[in-house]
Amino acid sequence: MERECYLDNSATTRVFPEVAALMNKIYLEEYGNPSSMHHKGVEAERELRTARETLASILKCEPKNIYFTSCGTESDNISLIGGALANQRAGKHLITTKIEHPAILETMKYLESLGFEVTYLDVDENGLVTPKEVADAVRPDTILVSVMHTNNEIGSLEPITEIGAAIKEKNPNTLFHVDAVQGFGKARIVPKKQHIDFLSASGHKIHAAKGVGLLYVGDGVKVKPILFGGGQQGGLRSGTENVAGAAGMALAAKMIYDDFDSKIDKLYQMKEYFIEQVSSIEGVHVNGLHGLSVRQTAPHVISLSIEGVRAEVLLHALEEKGIYVSSGSACSSNRPHLSQTLLATGTPEQYLDSTIRISTGVMNTMDDMTYAADALKELLPFLRRYTRQ
Ligand code: PLP
Image (cartoon, rainbow, N blue to C red; front, top):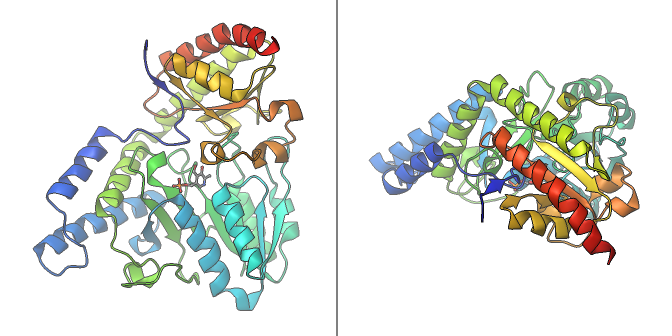
């Protein structure tokens, strides 16, 4: 293989070497249970406390607002199920959008089975929902709204601050959950300023380990646990904390948010350049950019629909050149159903099966973009001939 060009960073990322080193130190030396009262426990508890403080300073909140979970999915589940169960006396209506990750959509289905009513909002061709559309759906019995920060398939950036303000204006008691699994580390997020009550993020999307997630819960927000046990983390999330995972996630976030603007600018430059390169290829359509500039979308997600080539065939042809991308969204690509995001954004039928996602990260270079764009230019005419036979 000529080289390795990993462009599937929205599926997961390579762990920063510094994060791996810190985790290794915790696994091998500071391996105590943070609830233990002896020295080893205190050592581990210190790592956990530092991690919480670091993440709290990034989100401009208090350490007590930060909980560690096992993944973004778990953070989403606690917010939705725990938020709904704790507030059901005020109503049983919930709102979300049609382009959420399955961690939200499947959880909403579960809540419907428990007797909650869920409104699924439509989005436009760029995957966007307006603050007015959200506010119009809010009723006196709406207890929670969940809108994602950044879409994982086409990179839509939802107007979170304005949506939060519109929800609170209509019904100050309605809680606002934001799935920021793709947005944390790619945007500055300040939950308090953005009217956010619950925020989910995930370690493995920001060059930390798989198996650790972050949940922000605002002051005074009522939420019930979904895991019961030893009462760790104030009883909201029982279970011995993943100390190495949490410490690694905090370090990764600190590294990303250091000199943040220039990192994001570089991602945008790579996206702009790549789109310019592939737009000249016949039959290649960029999704989520109708009438928007690249900088109005996520810096790291590029969705391409390609005429006459099946995504899976293209994915494997790119793999032959060491280029790793995803077909639609990796989280659902092992299931045969069609992408909810592509359906909800009105993607033409013939492209549903011919869409790939390229997702970059801070470890990618402009050279990677050239290599991948050149590979597409070279492969597409050949694959189309092959497909038509
Ligand atoms: N939400 C979004 C928007 C995602 O992209 C993902 C994963 O891709 C998740 C939630 C789930 O995160 P995790 O893999 O940490 O459970």
